[in-house]
Image 1 (cartoon, rainbow, N blue to C red):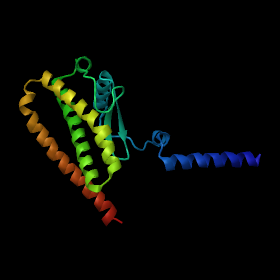
Image 2 (image 1 turned 180 degrees about the vertical axis):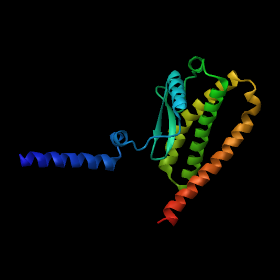
Image 3 (image 1 turned 135 degrees about the horizontal axis):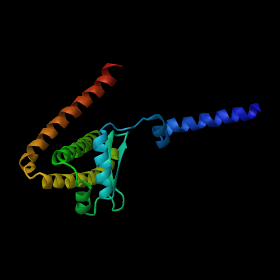
Amino acid sequence: MRGRVRMKIRCAMIILFCMFQARCATYFHIFGAGRSTFYNDRELAILEKTVKAIDFGYGYDPDIDLNYVFSLYHGFSDFKPEDKELTQAIDGMGPETLITYSEKIYWLTRVAVFKLERYKELGDWKNYTFVKKYLLPPLNFYSDLLEKQALKKDKSYADQIDKRKREIDLKIQWEMRRREFERLWKYDYNS
């Protein structure tokens, strides 16, 4: 009887050890680590609706702290134009909601570019290649589709888009510098 209990305890310990060491999906699912807080509930509903319409999926990589979208069927750089399906998916959405969401996705693409440049500076070629080859092309494609749809819904947005993009770029620079400072402060000065 004691042998069976010991064996069960050993098996449980080995499984837990593997989950913590490998940081597998089960670990993240069970313990809630690695969840993105980028989207609120409304934006998440829009994300699900729009990516489904263009045969895309979405995810979050906790190792590089980046949300992403990906093509389910078409590859990593060539995507099937899905304007009709996307138009139908956002049919009841107001122009301001679509513009705000489109700008949020633009923000995400700029964060990905910032991380790409940072990985290049650090010589982290694994993450650089991962972002450049697999995450950025579908994200740019998705962002461009949303921007086109926003411009269709609100013609006056064309006059403001460049100014708003510059504002987003400045905010991202500020935010990424702040994060870098906090990271340095945490590891260098709070040791």
